[in-house]
Image (cartoon, rainbow, N blue to C red):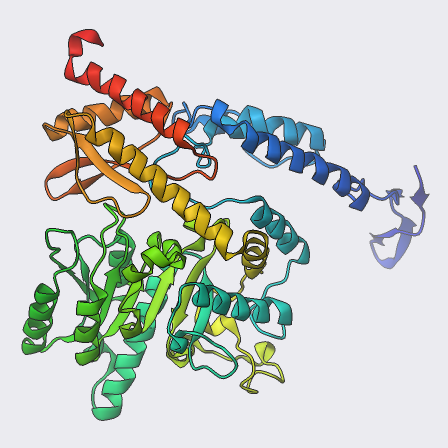
Length: 514
């Protein structure tokens, strides 16, 4: 072992000058490098092979894990290792420790929630994003990160045929930004709307304090809206009122108008409405052509949450579901749900980007740069809650170029067709009922009978771990949701799932058989 004698320690003597004595020999051998570029090449290829094998063989794995809470704590040490461990041991532990507790969202037998997108081009783009490793809070922090996002959001906006007001273009006042989730987008829109109305009122009535305004602000959404809307209200410190939905589970415009008039008469300040296109419960659609003009008339910010359904609007046959978007101030959907772009990638557009930057802009000197006031670029840190941001637009760029618009449209249409296949199978069995019109890739169904009967059926379905579903409540009914999710799902998987459900239904309806 190589040593050095040039390190000394101080040894003070009582009543005399300290003297220097050689310290213990110190090793100068470099610590082992855990992974260099050469090994990274080899291990990277191995990991790509593992990932491809995992996805190709995913349907052979139980879709839902058979573990109990806390299972992992008994399999790993309670603290990090002091010394480097062999990479082979880490990889070996993926199957031993991680995979037993994984819910396989990309299994063709996963029909729960809504889809989470996945494609090989997006995975490769994520690898490149990790390698570049920029923190794109400003144009100067990485010009390509900022500019590609602006262009990709315009590409996607044009696929959806959004009004030009939502596009950045060369000199537009609107534009798009990638948020982490639809929940973030709703919160960002609410906070921007809150700031906008507060400043407007203070300009007209300087004596009004921010606190006095805040306590009177009211936001609105359908009683079918996602719980993240309620959460945005809690975080934003404003009242949120649920507007009753009609027989099609769409927000009642007349009920919204009555609520607005009643609240204004009581001295409250309506300022924000969330319209949902493709609700989580049953994929219902609020009517933008009714809600939009009302919001514009009342000078209330209209935000559209199309987290799941928005991807379908790139298909001409579904674009009418977005009619009325021209009345909105902001619009959001998740390409990471249904457009083959892996999580996280939530696309949000605004008509006036100054509404966002006006709410979130702070400019400490260490973040400033010489181009920020040129008008030619934007700094996305002013469009969001976090400061840092990953190079997420790479995933969009890879996916859009690899599939093309036609390939993405074909993918959406395949899922919708499979949903209608499942709907047809359900309708052929008189013991079951369809609970909501099937528009896209979600089928809401149940056994005719009590809620308890359907709760038992769902418990049997998920307990068997062959397929995975989640429920919802539609009014007073407990309903099973069958969502087409996986990129690999086909007609055979849908038929097998239905055969499995029917068999379990037999057991539930005739307990003596079970």
